[in-house]
Structure formats: C-alpha cells, structure tokens
Amino acid sequence: GSLKDRANPAHSTQSAQSAGSLRDLMFLLSGLLKRNHLGIHEDALFEHTVTGTKVAVENFQTEIEACLKCIVESVDLPFEEKLSFFKSERRSLGRTALCLSGGGAITMYHMGVVKAFIEAGLYKEIGVISGTSGGAIMAAFLAVKTEDELISDVVVDTVSTDYRKDGSQAREKVVWFPKLVTQMHNFRKQGSLVKGSEFFRCCTYYFGTTTFAEAYKRTGKHVSISVSNAQLGNTFSGKRRVLLNHISSPHVTIASAVAASCSLPGIMLPNKLFAKSVDGRVVPFEVDGVEFIDGSIMADLPFKRMATLFNVSNFIVSQVNFHVRPFLPASSKGHPSDSILSFMDHDIRSRAQALSKLGLLPTFFGQTISGVTKQKYHGDVTIVPQFTSAETIGIKAVFNPTAMDMQHYISGGERAAWPHLNRIRFMMRTESTLQQCIKQLQASLMERPTELRNERWASQLTSLHSFGSLPGGGGVGVGVGVGVG
Image 1: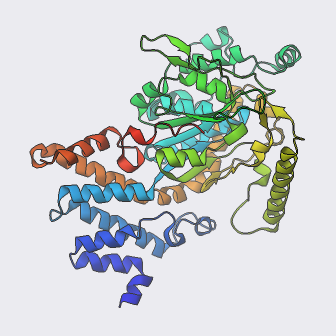
Image 2: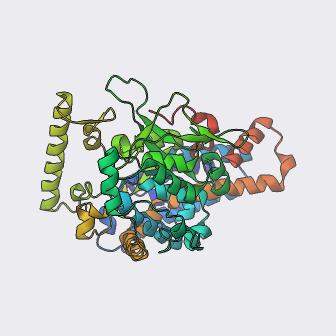
Image 3: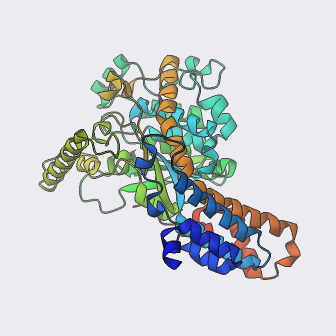
C-alpha cells in the first residue's frame, strides 16, 4: 500500500519505474536526492565495518542509480526535459569539496590523503578544492598538476628536497623553511622566522607564474586559496577575507597566493599578491599596496564562501592543525572524553570572544585571535592523521621536511584516509551518477546536432559543456563578486 511505499523509498521507485510513468519517477526522485537522506551517510554506519552489513542502504542507493539511468536512456521524454531535470537535481544535491587545513610543514600529510584518493579512484570525482596556509601548498599542486603528474612528481619523498629531480633545488637553496639558526636570526632582525622574499622565491620555484585561470584551463579543478587582509588598525571596514580562484581572481599568480596564505604573523611578514598582465608581465595585483596574511586567521576552512561560489554541500576536510586536533571528536559514539573536550572547546571559545569584545586580546595586523576561536574546523568527513609527539606540540610545523619526513607524512596521510574511503565513495555515488547522466546527454547531442532546434537549449548546453564541473551547470556569472568577504 501507499504507507509501505512511503516507509520504503526503494519500493516506491520500483513501483514508479515498473508502471512506466517516468514523470512520476522524476517527481519521486526529486524528494529523495538529498544529502544524507534518512541518515544513510551517517558516520555511525561505517564505524564498526567500512564495507558490507548496510544491505538496505546499499539497495536503496543502487535503486536510485538505476532510476536515474532509466530516465536518461528513455526515448519517451524530450531531451530538454531530461536535461532540465538532471541540472536541477545536481544543483539541489550540491557538490563535494576537499578542504585542506593549515598547519605549517605538517600539512605534508595532505599529500598522503590525496594519494589515497587517487589510488581509490575518488580524486577525479572531486572538482572543488580549497587550501589555506600550509594547505595552500598542496592545493596549488592540485591546481597545476594532472593526476598522473601528482603521482610521479608530487606525492613522492623528494618533493621538498629535489622537486625537479636535477639537483637544482639544493644548488639554489630553495626551502620552505630555513634552518633553525637562520630562523632565530630572522626573528631578531625582522620579528618573523621566515623572510617573505625567500618564501616567495620558493613558491615561484614550484609554481612559476601560473595563474588561477591558466591552472583551471589545464586541470579543470576549481581550486581556491584563502587569504586574510593585513590591514593595520581596527578601523578598516573593507573585506578582511578573500577567496582566490579562477573566478574571483583569474589573473593572480598561484605562487603569490600561496605565499600570502602562508604569511602567519610571527612566522612571516605580510605578502603582496601578484597578477599576470595581458602582455605576460607579473605586476602587483593591488595597486593601493594592500598586503595579505595567513588565511586561517579568519577562515581555515572557508565553508560558507565555497558553498555560495561552487554550490558545495559535502565537505571532506583533511585537518592537520596541531592546535585544533585535541578538540576534534574521536568518533560519533559519544565517548565521555568527547563530552569533556566539547566542554573545553566551548569554554575556550566563549572566553576568547568575551576578551575580544573587551579589547583585551592582542591584535596582529588588525586581526585578533578570536577569529581563530570562532571557526569550525571539521566537515562532513574529517580526516585526521596520527601525530607524533613533536607534531602534537607544533615543533615540526616550522622544519623543512626531509625525504624521510616526506615518507612519514605521505604514509601517515594514506593511513588516515583509508578508513574513510568507502564512506566517501558512498556519499558521492549519487552526484557521480548525475554527472554521468549529464555527460551522456551531452554525448547524445553531439551525435545528433540537428535534432536540437531550440537555440535556448543549445546555449544552455554549451554553457553546461564549458563549465561541466561547475555545480548547478550555470555560467561564470554566479561566482563574480562572491569570492571575497
């Protein structure tokens, strides 16, 4: 009966499909294609065993995919109606993003996470990526390198010591962090451990003068790097946060974005952004001399801006900030220790915000540390590696990784990611199926170009083809002006 249908979504879709009413099936699916519908993506389902046991949930997901394929392959529905349906459902469901946290040199753990994603076949399904502070380094690699290049050139133990595999890095003394003695000398002279000019030189060695637009054209990844405005004084009323990407700042060089995002007060002085002009020259991006600092000061994980700009509704977070890790819940089981950590987290945040309102917290370039306490540091899936003692207290954050360190970081990132892979794959199944259906419609149109007479639908498909990985299938106009603030 109808009550049974409502209680069993898989049974409902079977009934609609067998009755041959495709429009009824589309109506039914529009209410089922939601994130975590009926709790099918909950972490608790995957804690005891990452595969198997979830038979009803698996059957439901399989039935959803079968129904979507039935609709796309139907010859009874007009092409434009099917296209409109899949675009609408993709927009409603949203997309998955990979967010890479800050954490200094410890962010090399992100390389292991990405390697695990590539080997599991998940990386190619993730089109939206963000990186902040140290996480911006890995995000930049993902922006400029293809999947094969990442495996051969980036997620290797020599990436921090002999990136070009010709010995030039050692000859030119290119390092992310200088030796400890040099850092102490720099701090006495300029009040920061790392010279901004040397760090920028290192970024340029790795990423050249490639811009966000050029990187997107090469890899098709929507990569964003978060920076904060280093405005001296507290009277500044402009935008304090900027999300740099191929939509909001297409001509900004990725090297300058990474350098700015890593400029944590005390570690490095503020850096300027640079852009590539129409004649290929690298020029300052802000003509009024505005400088930028570490993006994690205001938003280590820019959830709201990414949701607005790229229609992201599912956030996978690789979290390696040593000061955040103690307050992340170990699991969803409700251990007593989780309650204690949650209380401590809430208490620290409340006290910091109260002190900030009273003006009793120190200010760094117009920003108080209360901005750090207000943030959310976990996502729908949060991947946290097992830290060593030196990493837990942050000592390793300012040491340039050796080849042995990189082996440790990459293998540690892989081990941290492995338990989450099946859940992530399951969470992305519906959006992957929707994307495949849209590509199938595109291919069918290319085979029969004369059958689509309506110019309105033709122009929409052209836009969809050009920005095929952009959530919602819309054009670039949705993103302009949203990349800041």
